Length: 253
Ligand code: DGL
Image (cartoon, rainbow, N blue to C red; front, side, top):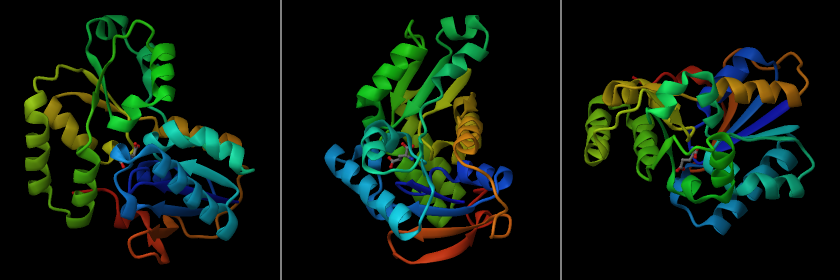
């Protein structure tokens, strides 16, 4: 079983990590850093890019299942990709149904928020999801175009002091944010959830477990040919596949 993942960069690595731990398969991860960020990309360009990356994973790498490890790509491309390719797709969406699992007083008091990219906020698929999962419109949604690029930069330079300063500057005009629970609607954000929890005094929620459950449902398991934690990695900036260890990327300092 070969499972392909892609994202505009290194979002989705939390999902990949849990998938590697729980589900034997050969994993292929494309970090499409040369087209980062998708959160502000022109939509038809993003759809075409998602088609190209899926083609690479399905035709060249013979992947049996594709994980769109990106909320933004899922919002705009998953329906089209399902028509274009004859493999199962697993997408990622902001985990709004989480509000059904916490006390109603917290939700009704407006103490739950969601962070997404600007393109996700605009997507008809997200609007439908919001209407369906949060019909009383109690969850506040904030779109941040600059946060995923900051996280990509942090993954490259690993400078936590600089990152924390940039994060504070980004959020300063938006404060105070009084959310007890914050739904992370972009796969980059769980990579820095401890920073967000400190800054916003909140608890971060991501759909990682649910996505991996879905991946396991759609793909049959077999013993991995690779060692635990090892996966095939392509960064579109340098364009060469290599084997990488998940510990090279996670955790961030
Ligand atoms: N990681 C992506 C998501 O989940 C998008 C980040 C970006 O490229 O803007 O939406």
